[in-house]
Image (tube, rainbow, N blue to C red; front, side):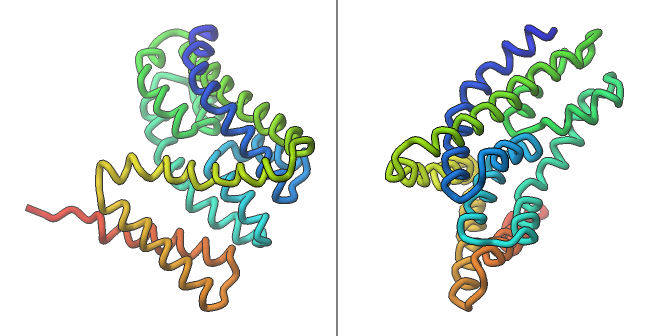
Length: 227
């Protein structure tokens, strides 16, 4: 079971390493120490939130602003955790709780492709191995990126900042292809963020309000019409 879990998580590891390295370089560039950026990967383990957090630190955002923004961005993890625990009904609770802490979009999607493992004896070992493979690769990549951030030329490290925008665009485009109104929500959030900054609000709180109000606009923009 453990070997199968590692093999299943191997493609996730290959995808995580370059992104984690980029995060490590950008976090180091934003002023975080090697210990701080590595501990963020250990305790947070959420790529999009870590990129956003590093960016908010770089622009001087406060702790409260960063916490609220990352909480809103990661709120989907509550839904994923509930769905994951429901799928693993036959697995003991002592396994479910730590496993849900390691859920990401990728580990959740891959584990959903293997629901039969939850019904097998020691099936929890499969999911634990899968998640740990992704988790440890993310931590290692972050640490490596932090180390590289100290030795690579500053011009090269600054050019990697485009990875932040590329990643969020990569997350947005598939959703927009399925539903164009999702793109409209992103535009609303962008306009709110820009307006807040123009009104003199700090960049951190502008990001928070843009995220929260933009997300709330989805309640109306994505509302299904009743037949």
